[in-house]
Image (cartoon, rainbow, N blue to C red; front, side, top):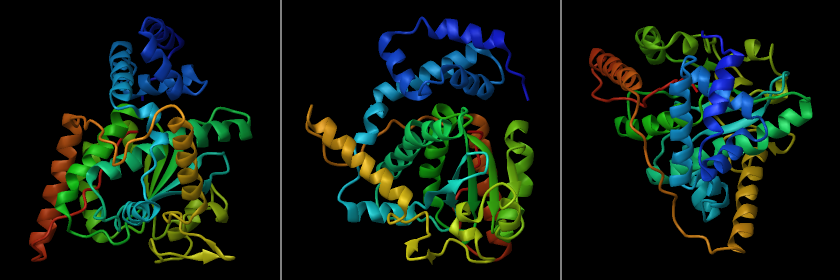
Length: 337
């Protein structure tokens, strides 16, 4: 892994000081008072190349302006019952914090179906969670713990992963590419749990294709991963699918509260949804909001990422043919964000 030096940071800062005012404004929304740490993230994502990091960051800022990302938290997905369908089929949530103060993000990879809304709503929802994490959750964690916290932990539940839903590749690749290009180096570690055979078989061929810095972030845990995860977080912060061996992404309740962090009824999603509705009311005082989903420009995937996706597809198809199953799969893409 490349060591980011003070000289690299100063060079990039000098270049960023020269960008136009609209780019400076959206950069403030990215760094949230931590500009140096943000420059380091982009330098890491481009292996210490100042010129490549500067291009990546400027491209990110232009993408934010062109797609009005600074205003996306003022655009709730409505009505609420429709949004509930999005949440029930795009299984992502926040279950708590690690002992070091890092948010614990849970992802139900195997049981997400993405079949209750258009691709635009799922991408809008994903970006809103990214922005809420970066503008609300992480700054609050930094204040609470008295130090900069700019990354999270992701626990990926592979329960229910099947050789099916090939048509989701476009959506999942788009989401992954958006994260790669515009939210780099935001994940400290990926923990993979409840991994079935088809994941293990695929992982063997995909792992050699990953960059070294990405490999170091990924840990495949045994079973639900509960014992290992309890070394870095309290029981209350464990994702619900880790609390019982073999429980998967099923729903649980504890003391009358919803313990399923994927659900719209969970505290995290209630807070996020309330926040977007409040922001919408504030923005409507200036200009009426538009109905419908936010259409975000979908970036072209990196050639290396495309190769990984093709390798995963080929391996899943090989497994399907071996077992006489004429189906494909939910694409699994672990990126270097």
